[in-house]
Image (cartoon, rainbow over all chains, first blue to last red; front, side):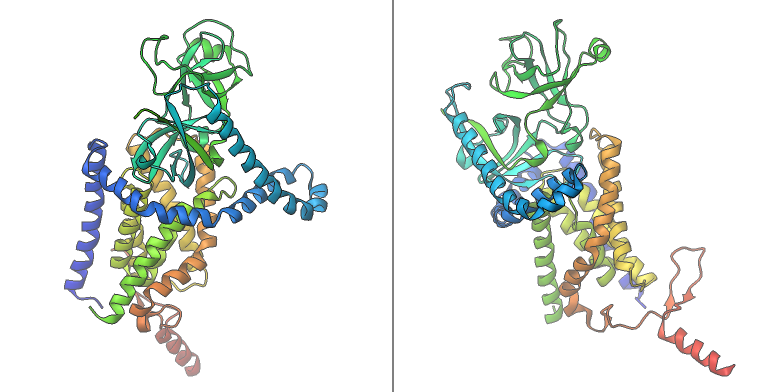
Length: 291
Length: 209
């Protein structure tokens, strides 16, 4: 049986740790991003990112195989019998497809580097995703490049040739990217080829909004149809008034649903992002070349 | 510090740091039914069940702080939840000494369920915009299932970490507690039906008849 001293010590330890957690929470919530706890966080990310990079790289072949199994599991419900017959052949094909898809992605990124859609003062830095947020509450990923590669906070992040999010935290060799589907994200967008502006944001936080973004605060009249492409507007309000963090013309997604009542009442329509936010592996950060 | 304590501390540190890195860098890359399995709440509860409330709370705090730091999310949220979870699991072991063969699986499922719901409540309280209800419910359900499935291997790893300090208290071999302490003021201490004392008393009673 524990004596009184042991019981008191046990209770004090638990209480002390709970109070410490509350203190950390309160201080963190009230301080700015340059505060002490945020700085410690960036330091911790910097220290552990090489280990995460190593672990993430080591499991890549296994991850590719599991991802493929997951994809084929969904498709199985459509044609169970046929897929069972082709299973052996598919395992072989999956490996080839994965390599092929990655090759295509890298080629697309290479073309993207060479295209002059984006301002010449932007220098794309290619990075790999090493950590993804595990909960529904956040849509954030950590990449393996940081300030030593020229990455800074608020720089736009591209994946598969479309906007994926922006950099929100940077350490020397790693950075955190907040995706468009995070509840804290908002990007000034426009319907391509039309003067219809709005703010692209998620209706629900985290991965819940991965399939369904909104072009909100649409004030201009004009027809919006399913399939119209939404791109970054380059300005926050009216053209040329306030410059956005994102250069103009980066594809975001295409209109997936237009409810006339919703548009009239709330000034919003729905769009599906071009980037599959649940499966981002390689990204490009548009850094400033002249910095 | 005794050599056993030093060894336990070292092993525990390695296991906790390793688990956090595996969770963030490896497990977040895999989605099963759209959900990422989370080993951290399961690990903390296993430590609590193995080594008691103080160690459970301390490991919960350390693991929670590490997760919050590396995911650049509000510092203290996971730490608070895991400290309470680890402490509660440790108290359960100190008071009730559960011995059912499925205790680890049930504890793993409950730990994941508690962490998912607790995290949701904390995020609501902090004013974080909530995801849609069904994706959240789906995630919570599968988190509990994965918690139960991961319990056995996680228990093995946690047991290896605290083995030097366990000695004769190893749950795989130790005797069962003779008397179960009350978990509330309304309850009286009871004889543990699985303890050796009770079994011997039953045997004697049977012989007497």
